Amino acid sequence: MAANPPPSPVPLTPMVQQARGAAPGALKDPLTSDTRLSPGSYAAARRAAGAVLRAIEEVLSCRARNAICVVRPPGHHAGVRGLTPGSVSCGFCVFNSAMVGAAHALRALRRDTPPSPSSHPQLAAVGEASEAAGWAATERAHFSPPPPLHPPLPPPQLPPPPMSGCVSRVALVDFDVHHGDGSEEIVRRLSASLPPSALFFASIHLYDPGDTAFTPFYPGSGAADAMPQNIINVPLPPMWRSGKLAPPKPGRGRGGLVSPRQCGCGRAEWREAFAQRVLPALRAFAPELLLLSSGFDGGCGDIGNSKLDAKECYHQGLDLTPADFAWATTQLLGVAAVCCPGKVVSILEGGYGGYVLNKEAKSGLGISRSNLAENVAAHLSALCGVDCHAD
Image (tube, rainbow, N blue to C red; front, side, top):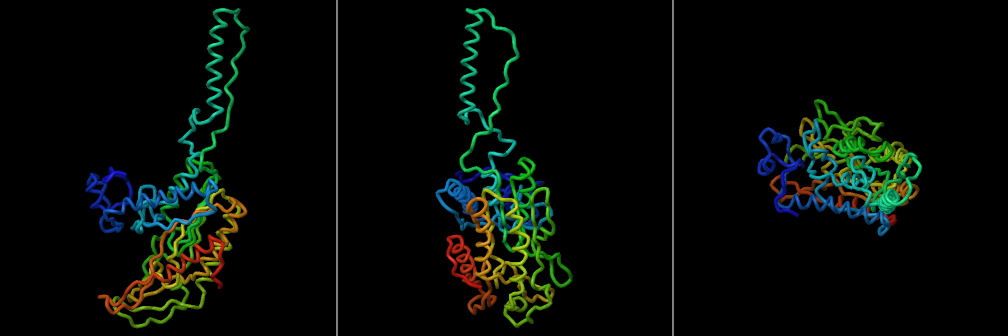
């Protein structure tokens, strides 16, 4: 891997773009480009995408039943050229590893990459036979009476050769709390070069266009389906729109801290939508490979689903627990067992931890990742067939 790769359209900050030779007119707006990189970010992003490719090949070759790729940076906000049109941020994403994996698994179907005859034994044999027939015809022309005239037979039409690690139907289910806008954009682009039944995308996420009390919830997309491209969007209103918010409590730092509700209403609505919208559509599509954009920022207390209101009070938008992530994983595995059978690759997306009081911090707050770890562990346990998280 080159230490300083050539300029590319990945979602880099304007400073990195300029250092790599981008023209001044092609630089992004520094006010909306928040995906900052360190010297090791490019290598980490490439390894994340490479890990997904390796996991897919292991699963499709039956060397592994399923796989989980615990990688960072995340990827589902990175579109065809990084920042998606109309978006204000790449959401810490560099390469869309899940969609790189989907395109890799479907590469045999791409109309812009036809198979070469040498890659198919039958086509190669046909070529050799045609060459031998040509030499025989030349000999007959010189040493034998000319044969009767008849139209030449067309060459046999053989199916494209099977490619290792390839399938014809791939589904991607995204349960990150944010809409996978980059994944949807890539699905729309890939659909132009794939059969209509090759790719499926479903995203269940919070959606809030905003008002005078709250700014829009990022990325502000995913409000409607796109049936011609097999795109299912399941937007859910956040808990701060339910009218049952906990009262603000005094806190240190910016504004106040609001404890997330523990009544389970957010969880129940999320499960109901998952069962009624995501699972039936996925089962009807019947994938040969199921990819998961597994975001855990919908967990109770995670800062990824939090929001400040106009008075700078802190609110939670969703309250999923380890049991919810285990349940969703088990449901997805049930569909995969019928369709693929059990070929699932999970890719880590969001999930950051929750605020805790920390007297040593300047703001008075710190980040605890214990809940994030429990949510990921529940997902992993379900992938392994171990049910240890009861409701």
